[in-house]
Image (tube, rainbow, N blue to C red; front, top):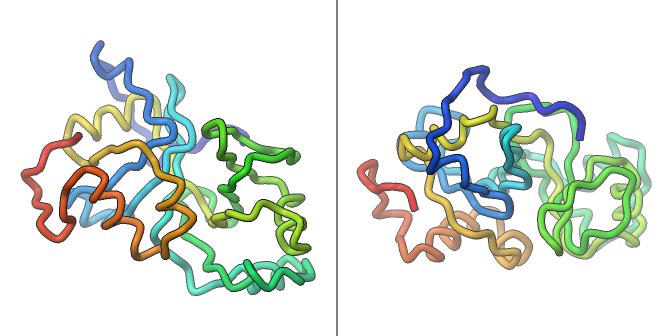
Length: 203
């Protein structure tokens, strides 16, 4: 994936309790405190979280761009009528000129990060060419950009009640429309998003 570029360049100390948290294959649900940021009302899938920081993909915010449009820009012929109408997602504010494909099954591509035993995040062009030809993964989310956190940053933000967390659901990612994903993730916690207030703590 190359060297990660954190969204913010700040250093955070880790408390012993925070050091053990691993949010890989979890959702981050933005709390009202994030309303003035680019993460307002977002649902983010965490692809990797370790001592070097975290990498995630926002999965409920779209560009005015479809896969067919993206393939046209990349000069990739698209014969896959099933997927070419899918919206391209805003994955986050880092490297907005770069594409990321979150997909199931993992498969065998040139540059893939396994986020779980069944999901992968691929940045190499071969997967887009396979998708266009109808030979790629059947379940895909294509984004421009990603979300990155420096070491200790996501733990600090959790302590500040900036996020709710819950284990990720592939069904929510791949079977629901983008605007349905955040409410569905909230339901995993038994919370109605419309009633969420800034006083709610993190899960």
